[in-house]
Length: 294
Image 1 (tube, rainbow, N blue to C red):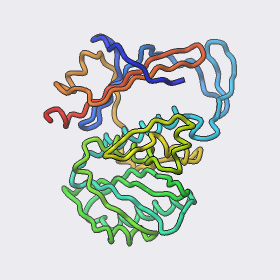
Image 2 (cartoon, rainbow, N blue to C red):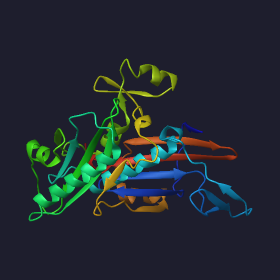
Image 3 (spheres, rainbow, N blue to C red):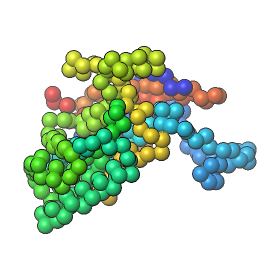
Image 4 (cartoon, helix red, strand yellow):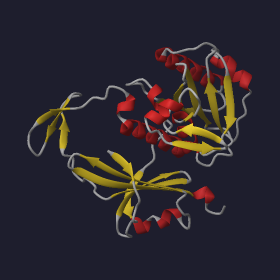
């Protein structure tokens, strides 16, 4: 069980894990922290409990909704990748690739994406290398979109007409957006991909499942309302080799100020986890260094 709770604070000498991603810094504190691995994986279905010598089977999830923790970890990984590699520079773009028809074949989705990336790289092969991160988005009717973040490494700025990318895509519509006015691209996109606008069709589903509702610019959204649309076992994202994960470091809480300076957390959240005979409290703080002097 994972519940939100109040938090009493971190002591200066407490160990925390810090993830630095461009101008975004995330801090994670755990009241109890395992320093040893207590199991050894034997194969995809079983593991060995080192303390007792017992061999047990992994519990494989039937679908993504059955494991909210798995989904949280996937979107956390996506946020890390986005914020470590994209910061709204003029040589970065956000493209949405859609289909004319109600396209529901996920194998075709990734095949079409691979062809599009190859065409785009060929078009710019004499000007720049290109790195990308693609995240898929399911629609209520079963169709798929691709949200593609592009970084043109050897250019100071990039501008591409929608029509040019539409022709390279060849399957429907393409929307191109600049990222320059978004100072937390990871949070923006992950919320966009996991939340869904509240309407008459999904309101009952949200109420029955006690799903949280948030309001943005006068519109109401179901937090995590899109997650059940992802089929089990599907890779939600793909990336090029140049898109790197951020480095994570353990340090004393008092030393975090050396990284964030006078910045205050713009986001904090605390969870209390209860699982059979194990309990833990996890606290997150996130700092946006672009907002320090705002």
